[in-house]
Amino acid sequence: MSASIASSLPERSLAIAQARRALIHGDVARAHAAAVRIEPWIARSWQRCIEAGRQPQQRVSFDPVAPSAVREVAERNRALLAAARPVIERLSRAIADTRYFALLTDAEGIVVDVGALPDGTDSATRHARDIGRIGVDLSERAIGTSAISTALAEQESVWLHRGEHFFEDTSVYSCAGAPLFGPRGDCIGMLDLTGVQVAERPELRHLATLSARSIENRLVLNQPCEMRLHLSWPGCPASEATEGLLCVDAEGGVTGANAAARQMLHEPLARHPHAPLHCGDLFALPLQMLFDAARRGDAVLEAPLWSGLRVQVRPQRGGTASRGAVVEARPRLRDVETALIRKAVADARGNVAEAARALGISRATVYRKLWRGRQPPN
Image 1 (cartoon, helix red, strand yellow):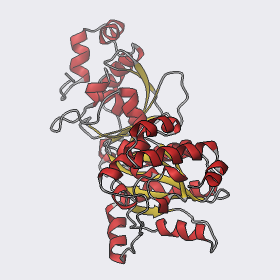
Image 2: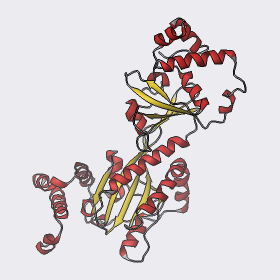
Image 3: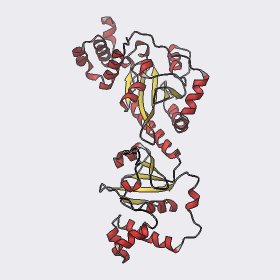
Image 4: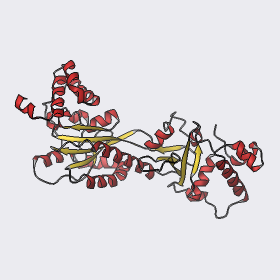
């Protein structure tokens, strides 16, 4: 790079170029000094590319994709596509005037969906069409450092601008990326917002992150279950970004959760491979109380957690075919009695002893009637 060209670069672009050149040439000390404004995960990706024997000047080819491969990718990611397409359409409208566009990949970095590409016949449009094709491999092994590869490797949202990409051929791109996590908490892909030869817009990292959470929420909402729990902290209005979602089966097993629920409850979805998480592991109240509230449809419970914290829970009936079987045309006396006891427990905020005193019955009777035919949680 000549001195005249270097002096014309903005300060950040110059720092990127210096750090990249020093690291690629093995001058770690100088790379560290120059990389004050380089994110550590970018340097880690550069290092992986170097260790794989790559050189920045190597050409990057975006190979054609066979129609059969496109069909296979679509079939394999059907649930992800159904959840993501409405979000990508919304995103495409939001970024239409910036010449950025949206890409969705699977966990291997293979493109599974593409938003509206910018119009035109210039080189920027051709570069956009190179990567904006379903089935194209945009993983680190194929195109080196990118928002796609770093988001998948680091499992956090990222922003890369021009020279922060490893290969010179990909230094025309600027991109924000956010990983996508499925209802079981595993990384299933990523959402990318990319522009070609455009102004740097790091605020797109925030937009990508919020949009990824929206896709994850749709995956949970689309998942069949017996009951779905909507969680929020007492006094805090729920929003798409903050509301926790849990999918529950007929036995109370937790079959899916969004990121907000996992963070609120501080629990992995499956702590043990053969012992999935159960509602009884989370909430210090009878499972049937949640199912009864779901049947009513408009109930909001303030549920105690075993940690001592409390959350607001809005239970809703899930999307399973058998859900109509649990609704009875006329309540039985036993069910009315049980409902009254559950309400007393709820009014006592899960304190069974206090509820028993209010009802004038023993604590053992409360447990026996609440858990008639069921085993209480350990």
